[in-house]
Image (cartoon, rainbow, N blue to C red; front, side, top):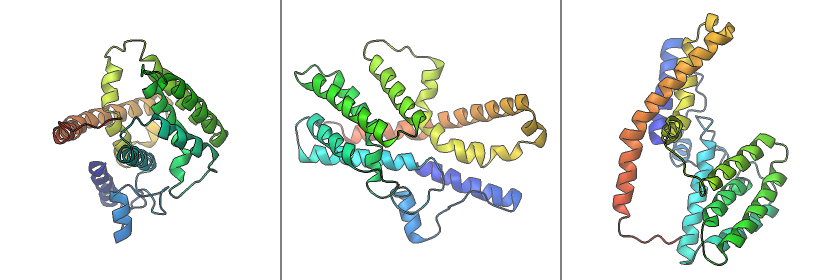
Length: 253
């Protein structure tokens, strides 16, 4: 994420240098905006806008990690029951666009993921609780996002695919290899693909759908290649470091 912030700044300087103007809006300029940006406390958690419009989802993920951490600190037992209680709580909280409670609106998707994780647990009450949790979070998903059907469909289809992987062996393919780079692709596709490379899209390419498609595929290929470098040089080393730092520690979930 921090590396991608540097790439956003490079994109802003690039545009300013070549065009004389900068379309990379919302570059943080004051102390609080910089701190909020570095700590992922930007919109929709606060009023500080994101400088890359995909960053909002990372704040959701961060709050999810904090919630699970707090539950792990609070109890040494399995977290299924506390998370089930939180899912019920999220079901009745009115929709919030900004502020701390915005995360609760997006909890149903996380709750479905947690349910799928526990669904493969063979203990006595794990599967019934998982099914109950899936039902509660699906209900919350439909209630909160009834006017955003694509969001509901993607969440449900994604959940089904993940659940099916418990019963079918997924073979490694080119697509699964690209999946390893997906986080980097997600973070840099806007600054690299939109803020920089789209500047070279000539009018001839823009008005021709075939040339436009080819150009977009070339951009995608470049972003995948760049993301693979970020994955191997940044993500993987830090993953190994985190495993080294937590080696021998028991994180019971």
